[in-house]
Image (cartoon, rainbow, N blue to C red; front, side, top):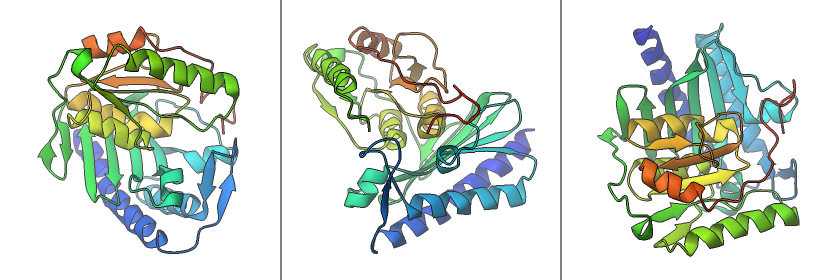
Amino acid sequence: MADLWQDAMDHAVAIARKAGAVIRDHLQGEMTVMCKSSPADLVTMTDQKVEELIMASIMEKFPTHSLIGEESVSAGQPCILTDNPTWIIDPLDGTTNFIHRFPFVAVSIGFAVNKELEFGVVYSCIEDKMYTGKRGKGAFCNGKRLQVSGQTDIKQSLIITELGSSRDPEVVRHIFSSMQKILCIPVHGMRCAGSAAINMCLVAGGAAEAYYEIGIHCWDISAGAVIVSEAGGVLMDVEGGPLDLMSRRVVAANSRNVAERIVKEIEAFPAERDDASEAGSA
């Protein structure tokens, strides 16, 4: 099946680049902004148009494959990962960035077979950076091999996280408490780029030692997970177990030492699983 998956990966790269061109073009125009689960969980017509473009292209070439897309799940489609070859798509990761023209916006396409991720493609379309990773074949950015940072001292590390879209005071309290504990280890600093996919690629490329978040979705991290792993990094749950793609929780780090040290400081809070119900979570 190796040749088939390479063909699929080549198609993912091509359609991600085409989708990125649409996103860049739409940056210049007026935007209609809509809310999903909260006033900070935003979607635009561009998100929806780009997902339709990607899905139509995939279904034309691979009609027997399954699809999980952010906007489709939000509209009520199931978010269920089966053994069937499955494309996991975030058409525009960093919608709030896109709305404000903050320059970190990505197309993220992950691909799983038998519930195991085979490849990931993340196109940071404003930067024109194409990140790719294929299981057992390494990770690359614009053709240059990626390697995680060799820094294993948490006190000399840069950590990435996000504030999320929930504005529930209790959730916000947990988020800031975790940030305070990690910052006061102390670490060199903390950053938020506004895109989970790009955050993971920054870890893969050695620009930061770790990224963690609770509340993301499978489409945010599926492609980045392959890229981090293939760049020599590690993935785990925020409470230290193995990464569960549907759990909406992730730690991606350059080393197990750094990941486990961060886990000690994270205040976990509930996040409904992506596969919690037949319709998934919005």
